[in-house]
Length: 115
Image 1 (cartoon, rainbow, N blue to C red):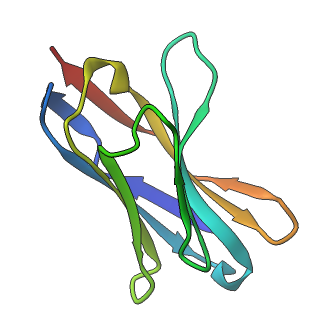
Image 2 (image 1 turned 90 degrees about the vertical axis):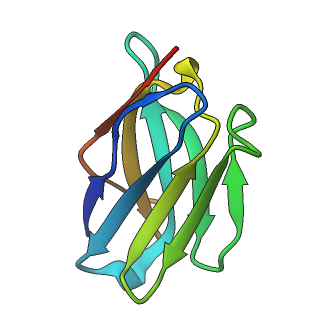
């Protein structure tokens, strides 16, 4: 499975960005797809995840502001980020987990929120 992430950038606090993660390869083995983020000096944390059945889960810090969705026709998962805060600044990584709990990672995309 290969993951191609895009959509990061610089935005002012209160603004919005949409991240995209396009999957290719053995995508039928994917059980869930999600986004993680890692700020400088911190660990990589889960932001949001969507299962193959369509159920979603969010970190408490983003619930109500971020929305994860997918377009199966494009094999793409999106993360719509609204009401961005400076503390959302991080490198965002797309993740896909297969049925054997193996993780695939895309390249990171930088999100910077200025105050």
